[in-house]
Length: 391
Image (cartoon, rainbow, N blue to C red; front, top):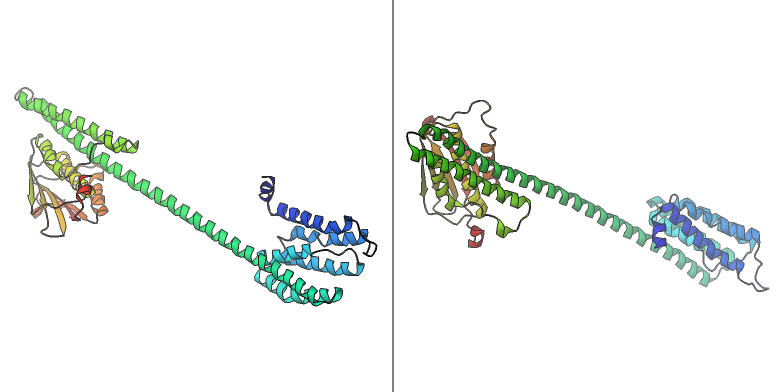
């Protein structure tokens, strides 16, 4: 709409529009036909009327000054005995503006001086009770409407500020969620690729050594390499499917505790003796916690293949008798060797991050009596619904 575009042009344009509308209103008594008993319309009186409207041009920047100027012009107009105005349009607009935009002291000056000035002006004109009541009513309504507009503007600004704060909070939460998701995907990719590549390297190194002396073992090694590669590709496709927001039905389920047997069997093919034991009565564990246990065991076994000369690895799950903490330990009997630059340490960092995400803890270090290496994970057991476990 043209008027809406005019308002958005700025406060100065709005003040000009209001001044033009008021000027048109006060011009009406000067252009309509007049009776012989009515004072004549003269150019000086019209000029003084116009002078009483011009201060509205700076009403937004100096509301009290604008009101005082309009009041002074009104008193200067009284002796001229020109055409009377139906309503003091300019004065009402100025009172409204002081109430809406003026400071506390400007509003107090308007109230404490305005009422006596209105009474004095009525006394000079008609000095009738009807005129007093009407003038005080107009002054009060103009001031009250200005205060209502002030309250509404303050409320609107508060709502807008609150909306802006909520938007900033939502944007920060979105950024934090994206950062957490990137970290989770990075951990998943590290665990999957590190484990698969470690298996492939171990088998590839062993294959040529036995290809002539033990062809069946060499064939098994190459099969293990192919299987590890295929598994890595499947899991990478699953993670890329998450990034591409593919339908959930097309994605492979996340690993669970039931997959630990297959994981251990896969590592056994490298020639490493791996034993999996469960102590206590297993309980229903949340799906995301099961993924954490699986990935931690996977990372610990991968580190054994990459950095230790171990011959035996023991994986143990200790379930609590009642609500408590599940303890997962992975111990090997080798010497943990890490040459400078052999790894980034992201795997151990990922283990601690996964544990902390569930309110648990993780520790890594030498095994009992300083022999071998031990990775321990403790997670609170939160019994979940069957639907959540199967998710």
